[in-house]
Length: 363
Image: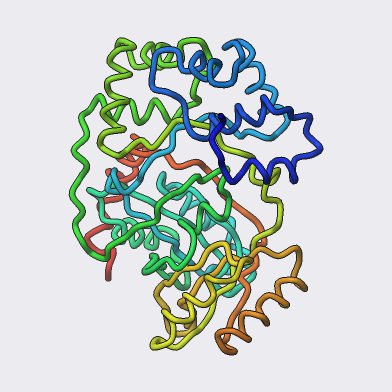
């Protein structure tokens, strides 16, 4: 009997235009759960779906071509790596925004950025390993890019959902586990050099082949058995959650999402956040620092077809929690959208080239 999962019904109702049969749906279910960590994982998948391995791989390619699958990838636990991450908002002159954004993008840990229709017109998400100081990296970027203003916006409490970046694009960012503890030294992950090399290798395209782990072993110049042992080690450590598929979020959850921020008094913020989380249209809600001139500390991502529907939802929320000041932060355009690369060699290079400004980064 196939396992029960919430997304099957979503596919049946939202992807009727795709020529999917029950075998496809069953295959998607098992792919989402993750491949077995054995020499021939697609043969195991074939047995579960009562197909042959060649048929499984043909169907996978078909689902990718039809836009239902975005691929098969490793899903990591950033906290097990000790990674730190946060959102940052900056203000630039509109005419100079594109040029200054390129300076920010030189940091390998900046994986997403966009322009918003607001005075703070440039927003980006940054992540670094635990043996680096996230805020020091940010202040170095600030020295290089010279924005008129910078707000550091780490999450303080999550009321609903997993993380804001995942809600922004779940197919691109399958759970970043945003995490930051201010000015706290985080112990570096005790991963061996071969384990880190496997982390890097698994972030490349996962082979849809008879012996995918053997293909990875060839790239690493080690044996297939070593790759499987290292994979099992990463699972035991809690670093690797699964290797599986991701759905195209536009195909399944096509309703637009809008970032709305709220200014709620400190003593009522936790209660307001809990109340907002009860709304079905709210897919994510969290608490972040507020600043003079930008007093918002409650961040919500709301599903709405258009601005009119969004306004109706906001009014309903106000009826529940009170009429607090709020503002929709409209995304004008996206500049950068890259998948997270853990332990990239490029970050070491960036730090060596930039560490000279770290001593004055907080002045």
